[in-house]
Length: 367
Image (cartoon, rainbow, N blue to C red; front, top):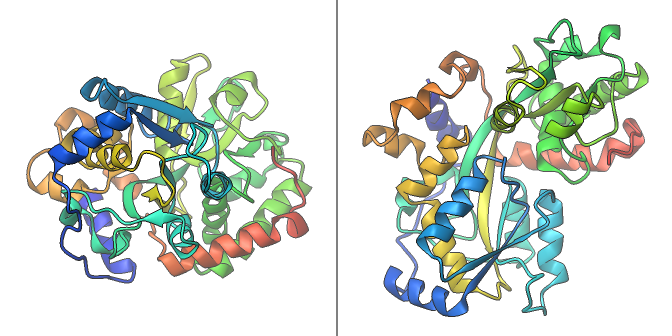
């Protein structure tokens, strides 16, 4: 089922044609140049997000000559774009070489001249619909929106979006980001809108804003960025976040407190994240080497270990490269059957509606 869902993504988005590999450098030349640069600056990569802690450790082990400089791990997609803009003329350690952002932010960064093209060796195995034909951005992984619930505090675990409006969840529900800047939160709002029957895109975004207005008016919404720590403390007993983040938090908490991860019955929204190299990268070769690592079998399996579906999922499944134990650790395939993959146009329209309307409609200052 999960293979079909990713295949569905390639037909659900506008298809584009991929061009042949556009790198004049060999991998050996890139490796040598990257080692000479000696550093890679990443941004917004929490270690418990999609298995990034182990992915970064794997890159360090393979290339010990390269220091990984991790900037602002808890930043949102909009923050990453701003970091490139703010450091255009800065070749120091505060300038990110690479970004990992929500689908809508990839084309935005390209349109603003903030990215440079590069196609990894496994380019052809990344579905055409989720990569820029010129190589400015390309999908890395996806997951679905879910609820992470502290069952020490929440007696009746909500099973769907409408449940969150019940009085018993007063002061309990939070988003895992600021919906004016965080891709995860922006799409959390769209998922809520989809659950009401609204059409994907602007309509779902506006319906989602109305949902969160009702949630806020009822006193159920907590204007705090939810994470494992706030959930454990009881500040945000129910957090709306990607399933892979929720599953990682479950592992981190290790039963203290006990939690449950729920994929809602309706409004099951799939979200794609993409990689890009900064047009102003101080270490462009290290950036290319990082991309090669991420899209190698080793890098893709690193994301799968972090409960994410990697971009090369279909090709690796067909080649028998997906270990059974990693597949069994994911939620049941049935949980993904109703997942909807929004088109890039729908993602953009929803983002505009949510970012532009949150303050006026909901009026909750999430921080």
